Image (cartoon, rainbow, N blue to C red; front, top):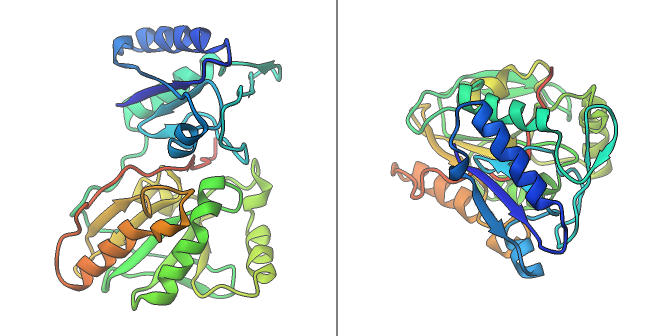
Length: 278
């Protein structure tokens, strides 16, 4: 488990956040000295690290609190405690729950070489779509509101236009808590864009996301010819740099079609956490 605390020294709250995080780790029998504490000192560093404010806590690359549409930059972050009060640091109960979920492996992710589960889901464009494990394919877990997913969206769509491999977008988020991710909102988005060249699928019961072990939006899975997982991670190295052009995803597809193992075969998925139902 990788635990990171990112801070900007323009905000005074990070010592309290670190103390709360250390306490939560001790309670769960985890080593608080393993926390990686990093100072984000410039706007360029904030952009490179997708830093949306101080303090930010990530576990295995995933923010413990959905940044939503918070802009990247040097600022003080606002959290909401479970009793509704505004706070400069996360609720300690949220820290414990996030650590506990990761430690217990509540949702195991597919590993490179694992068989990828077949599925069929309703498509926001109409009808249904899915994969059957009989051909190469790309599955991207995404959503309507996460700034990371939105930043990478056009690059992923361009990949779908350019390659002879099915590319499927899957939205698994809990629509009760996040109405912008409802099936109706998905359909409206596709219609407003004048149609999409790839399926946008609704994983209402979250069974597909759970079977894949999706962590973030986006989270990219590339399926090899034999139906096994060939690549998993981010589309490229920087959601804020369109010039990267989903390079990791494109390279993985090229390798799969050539019968080679992608290199890298795995990168850290970066984005908002999947919004699981309670």
